[in-house]
Structure formats: structure tokens, C-alpha cells
Length: 251
Image 1 (cartoon, rainbow, N blue to C red):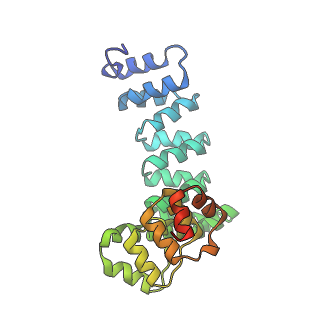
Image 2: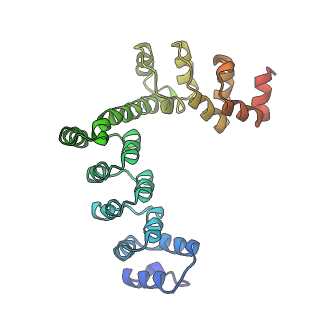
Image 3: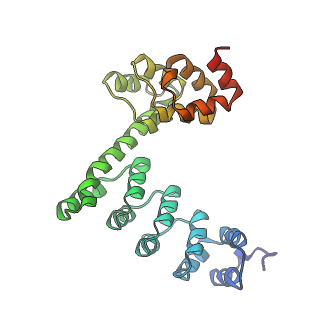
């Protein structure tokens, strides 16, 4: 069956083949990867007592339904829920499930990466009025901070490569300073404008550019940034890279 391509068989036959007898985790992962979406749905139904199977299905890039995602919430599987939203944009219902389960970090990650709809924002504020515990009292502020990260990243993304130069320059000239997560996305042109606006990179952004060995950006960093403010990690990255080391020494 495997020789002929077991994914050509019916969903039930695929599940029967994959779950028959013991299989090593890596072998199981590869087989789940080859299954059709309908077969994965059928396998998910049978995975209630097998967290590993759910992980393999998520790793296979399967888009989950709200009902399937709810199983992760009901079982308190924060790691699996986080793994899923790293791969796919969650629905509004999934986001609401996460906040109700107090998966705060995963929810804020989604806000930073994907943004939030008006429906979800209203939902959080309404819930915060009802529940007066520490989680719900703090969530609106943390959500707002996460949405600021999303907005800053969108501004950098939408003005990269000289797209809408006026918008980027106006953004900086208005006193805005992109968050560290957005700074590390800047291209050379954006960084030149950023520097002319009198702004310095965050330690996180410096470390990110050194880690990626973005040579054009690294050259400008040595030119524009205060080296005495480099973190220990940034200094270690310089020592580990001969070209960065040469630039640091001035030749």
C-alpha cells in the first residue's frame, strides 16, 4: 500500500494503514504528512487520547476547523495551540477560545503577527468589564501593546524598497519610533531615514542584524550606532564573524 501511494486510498483506509501497529515517531510524522486532508480529519477524530498525533497533523500544515481547535483548548494543550497559530491565521472564534482559556501569550502573538478584528477587540473589552481578575484587567493593555507591534511592522513592511517614501518619512518625522520587532525588519533605505530622524536602534534590532549577517545593514550600524551600547550578545556575534570583526576594528 505504501509503495502504491497510500494517500490514493480512502480516508478510512489511510488512517487504518497509518495507525496499524507501532511506528517510530519520525515514521509516523512522515506518513501523516502524506495523508489527504480528509484522512487527517478522520485521524483527528480518533486522536483524542493521542497528543502526538495531533502534533503531527498540525506540523503537516493542516488547516483546522474551529471545532478541531477547540479540542486543543479543552485539553489545555497550549503548546499545540501555539504551534498551530504560528503556521496559520486563527479565526475569530479561535482567538476568543484562546483568551477564554487564558492562553494570553499565544493570543498576543497572534495580535502582533496577524492583527485583530473589531469583533475580537470588542470581545476582549466586554469580557474585561465582566471579569475583574488580574488576567482580564491586564489583557486590554497588553493587547493594545501587541497591536502597536502589528501596526509598526505593517508600516515597515508597506514602505520597504522605497514604497510610499512620504509615508515612512512622515511617520518618523511625527515622532514615531518603530518597536524593536519592526526595527529589525527595516531595509537599508528605511534605516538611513531612521538615522536621519535622530533615532537609535534597539539592542534587539542590532543583535538581529548581526545574527542574520546582513552585511549592508551591519556596515551602517557600525557607522551610525554607539558601539559602547552594544550588548554582550552583540559583541559575541561580532567576535564570531571575521568580517564583522574587521569592520569593528575599522578595516
